[in-house]
Image 1 (spheres, helix red, strand yellow):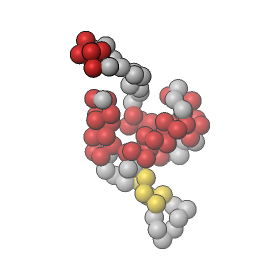
Image 2 (cartoon, rainbow, N blue to C red; image 1 turned 180 degrees about the horizontal axis):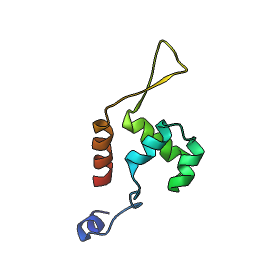
Image 3 (cartoon, rainbow, N blue to C red; image 1 turned 30 degrees about the vertical axis):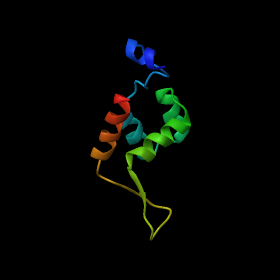
Image 4 (cartoon, rainbow, N blue to C red; image 1 turned 60 degrees about the vertical axis):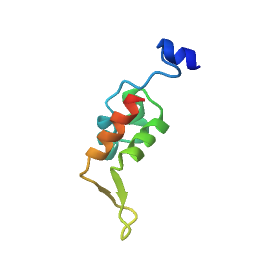
Length: 86
């Protein structure tokens, strides 16, 4: 493994080549989990992971049925850039 890393070829699965921010925006705009996953050709679990990592959804404790969209996208962009670097 060490030698392979030194020689340069990628070890493991290639990173996803999708617009992570757009996946989160689509999901938070009301698209169903399945439709977002099909649109971007990823699993539903990947969509959930991206939304959770973005920090874009926060449950309102006074009304559990409502979801409050946070306006901070910078957190998600930072997480996406870290994930793309790995």
